[in-house]
Image (cartoon, rainbow over all chains, first blue to last red; front, side):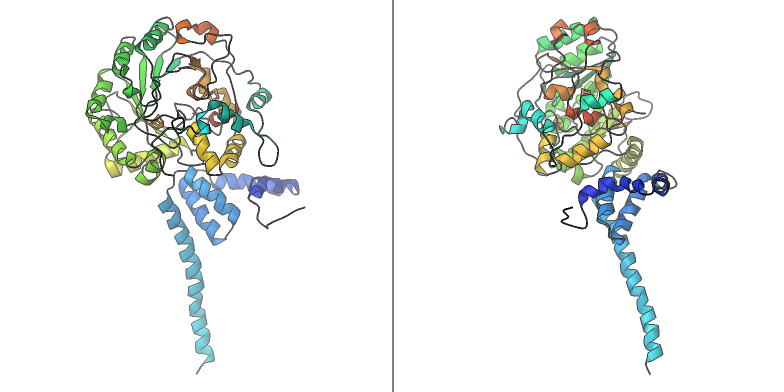
Length: 112
Length: 355
Ligand code: SF4
Ligand code: SF4
């Protein structure tokens, strides 16, 4: 099979095919997925923005594609979407930086 | 997306030609296959041939002239389009309506229908028939010239329902679709309509807004977007309106040109085909609407009108021969653009078709 890249945009629409090898778990996952994104205490738009931020944090190109479309479809605007990405960036950056405290502790431990 | 000032037809662009549009809609896609044929899709769901359920709406297109040149316009309207319905043809519409009391709604569209010199006369005559009259007003026309400033009052006098496009509650996305400065003018026009009582509680004057996505994506849930539009327009501009209609952009005319030019055509068609919903197909607006072109010819809908797909040959072709009994037995003419009406919760000139 010819393959030009690990990520092929056409594979996104084949996501549902994962049920072929394990129908029961696959179905449970998609049912759950569907329920999660329904309007609840959070609106569908808010959930799409959270999903967009998480997509960037986990750096999944499929999810970034899907949730960029989804956010536009649900009426989010470009500013809201970029702010969501900054939230992801702040948490990811912050998560790296907060470990600086651990580093500082270790420095203290090892130095005179 | 910079807005052009000329129609595709004025630019002699190939997408100004309906036959070329149909060719593009039917051509094979990159992997050599075709999107499933729309008629076959309906057949598989017991809906082919698609028949009317009873016509209650006459949609009359007064012409292709418009003060705007929106990027997504399915009419390919613009200031350079000269096709306009004559007063004689309007009279034929009125005559037809007298013989068809089943038709309870007259939906006036264009272009900017107000630019037709007989527009006011036609609305006045229609208001005597005691039916619901809808005017699709693009908002900016109200400010385009002094002679249009009194339109809100005119609509009110004749108890017309106003339906207006506003693709988003911010300037950037609205202007990208409808042209520089359109958002600001639309806001002013909406405030004028509110001032006349439109969209205000207790007045009985209905002002509905239309949302079309500004790009290659489908509209989200009408209920949720309506809530967001109401909150935003009220808090930022003090604007009130009644209902928001979410309309899917059909892949024809200028929107088709945009899709092809931006490399989004296949993925957009794929989205429409994947979202095909037989329940939405069963509620397609062509089942209760007949569309009249500026020259009096009859179509299943305004989209078919722009693709020059006239009603099937065995029934009355022109408003002068209007015979509702035979028209109500016709088979609706379908093509691949129809996928735009059947995606998700469905789409029509009145928004989602599944409530
Ligand atoms: S979408 Fe409406 S307002 Fe815009 S160019 Fe077409 S007819 Fe005119
Ligand atoms: S495009 Fe026209 S004919 Fe086709 S489904 Fe929609 S309303 Fe009916």
